[in-house]
Length: 234
Image (tube, rainbow, N blue to C red; front, side, top):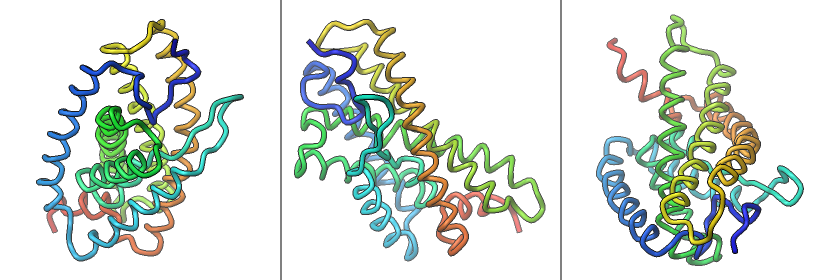
């Protein structure tokens, strides 16, 4: 029997049934295909090497766990960070590549659960985090000279936090559809929400610090800033 304490964002094999794994595997493949097509509008001579660096950075940092509660630890998901720096479509591909490598080479996350993990972290996490970042930046840029770097950091913090929580809720949905073991959905949802709010705080801090460092040194490399400015007529 699977207890709530054994549930985590990097789902292992057997947490959801085969039908649910196949369903979300198909969703992941279709969505990543769309991201691959759309990423052509985000990639240029600046973002191609940056995307590789972002994927490598997220891969390295995901290997480091930080304690949240007794017996519970978390690590960077990186969805909001990748989307803010290189764009949502390219960011989703970066996270998906990291998850595939971790699953196949390091046994971090089950192979049959790869589709659900990609949906949660590379699609839901990226989409929710970047969507919030865009909305907050649209409000902040009303200043004539644009928002200062500390405001960009605040936007990145909340994008990382919300992206993490939404990714966790994606797991709750998948477990509700095809959980392989009986469990109270209220207990599962409550546990995932509370722990991932705490994990999201750590995610937000790492995201904010990284984005602020890049924004100070090379603001032209931050996709969020470039993408939103492109929409404003000169």
